[in-house]
Amino acid sequence: MLVASLLSIGGCGSVSHGSVSPTARAGLVLTDADAGKTFQLRSGRVVLVTLHQVSGYTAWSDLHSTDTAVLAPRVDTRKLAVRGVTLGSFGATAAGKAQLQATSSVSCPKLEVCPALARAWTVTIQVT
Image (cartoon, rainbow, N blue to C red; front, side):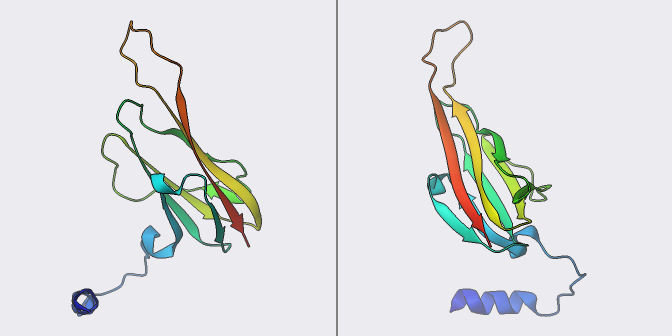
């Protein structure tokens, strides 16, 4: 109740300039915890992804859609991420199924032998 009151007060006297924040259009906001899950999304909506680096591993990289005709990458207009945070934004442009994927590997100091372990982050999105 208090939050709703503060939000309505914060909007008093404000002027809209016609732009909508990417978070307001987001149909899905995904994080590390969503790995392995499947989601439904309507065409025209936006998927925002925020992944955090795990201790002992490199930052997530190669965040991509397996079908850019269904989930197209978009410029992520959120503020720059802090070190160890990977941001991504994808627009649902057509009906179909696509996966969002990213990888991370063991962080190994130079000239040291380390296991070739990797982590994968994958979600499946069905666009209607």
